[in-house]
Length: 235
Ligand SMILES: C[S@@+](CC[C@H](N)C(=O)[O-])C[C@H]1O[C@@H](n2cnc3c(N)ncnc32)[C@H](O)[C@@H]1O
Image (cartoon, rainbow, N blue to C red):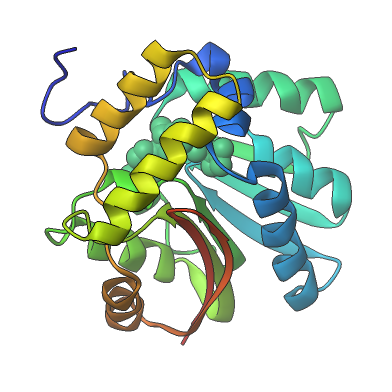
């Protein structure tokens, strides 16, 4: 299958929008557990009333999960995909969370810096951004909108594509997808996306970017084959 060198994720999310909630749970090892771990990390650090920034909110999976668990939290979800946010908006209406969850179609850097958040999340987002200064800019835009000591939860595919470890994980994941019942064609599409439009970096590079963007104490709380989850603190 021929794919463009760089997919425009505003119009072409990596997984078909209508299938997203079902597919992501098949594709990402331990997706539900990862989301619960991220929530647990946040709950351990935040008071019962807090203001969260959810970057790459997508179909609203983490927004709804956090709202259900933490009635005192207010949230802003930002995402460039209007299609993904339309699904999030319908869930917000269904759960009557309109007073607590706002959505913005766009990028973090479009948000004003007058509101500083008590925590932020970026779950399965930054790996779509190249490491040519854009990943750093992405993290800096989040840091500029956080209170001092606020935590950032970041979950991404990670590693060095040119290492045997990465190739081995690729092999593991193909078998995992097969075991999960993912159709072979979908598996091939995802591998193509991985090769062309996902920009994983080794953990050491991630920690350097955290430092440069103004975060400290990075700590990995989750690993699912090639996907890692970290918490880091805004200085
Ligand atoms: C794989 S989905 C993750 C959705 C959700 N966070 C989850 O965990 O299921 C990635 C989302 O990031 C969004 N996205 C892509 N680039 C982004 C950027 N630079 N800033 C914010 N969101 C972005 C996409 O539109 C998409 O909705």
